[in-house]
Length: 549
Image (cartoon, rainbow, N blue to C red):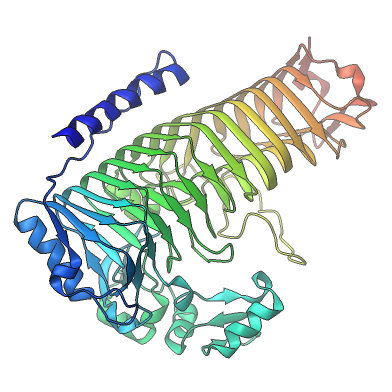
């Protein structure tokens, strides 16, 4: 009873603290879990923590027995507990002691192909190391480690390893791609890389059709499907085969005080991908991963639009993200939409991008009512803040020697497959080092619109790049950039409002304005005389497009 009362107080704290960050806005309330204190030790079911014995049956039997008795705690004591897939059950708290390591086996035969979703589409994947479906009141807690043995599953690009690491991979077995630049752990994994839409359940295909490249269908480590009242607290989740944590169609989820880790080269090694879920709190957690850190998703393309389940009512606070493609991310699979999301008091250290909002044609979906404040960043390789509607499924920062062409610009008809980004509120940002301060790139048929950026100090190589945007409001921005030609680039955009922007004295060019569509640029409380050259007009833009007050 005491624990249940304590968790109820936690719900009250969420509401009061959040209101101070976003005055006048009603924030989500997340229902908490509560468990009986009855405890079953997995050793009671003959589990052995010797790192050799396969404990799949023992651990699952303990969880089932606990649930059937009305719930409680299943205790994983100190030791290395080798296991195959573990299935959670309602009203059970899987609790790992400090010196407990739950280690998932490298034996791929223990992970049968099952039906699920991947990257927003119905798909066959190898069974997840930890899973739960249609459950309520579940938890994984403690201070131990859950290790998915992901290195056994992942293909790796040579460019992402040191020479010693690369030679070690080759010596471990597996095989190389034809160009000798990618290592695959098995022949089945290699076959999957050559297959068209591997694992996707469409055109009458079933999971039996995927056996020839089964090893390629890497599982997400923790998959929770349609679960209500979930707590993940204190545990270290590391070394996942694909995504680390994947709640799908869940409600009232709390992620508190966890550590989520993957090698920086881990392909698809996301931290958490919250998909089509509602009422979520992510707090006091640390991410250091190979792909996006904290990511919001809601299905992909037609399948996501048909499901029509947005991710909404989310609070992310007091988190730190180290290496990741993005610190806080929405997309690119956001076809069901995303709304009412609140992010504050977070730090991103060494991520490729800080705030990363990405989509592409074909997705559809509306992302709106996004509130972000009090974000600190350091050593961001790419953009501190990025809005991009031309996502191309590539790493956000090109590898050495990699060449990329700009997307072809053309106007297409607006359909259900046209994505929308609107109503973003970003404030109190400090960034010490980035490739680009702010990058906005919308579609000519669907501009990014309604973006409000206030009270920011950003040190970066480049300043602002804004293309195909409408209704961008920037107030109280201090830019310190090494490339000042130009400081601000605006192309085919309108209703761009700049209020109190400071920049390097002696900058080569303050504004580069281009595109015949560009209009209604308003600049005030900004000393334009500090630049050597004030404005350059190109590609049909004229002096009528800008007013400096």
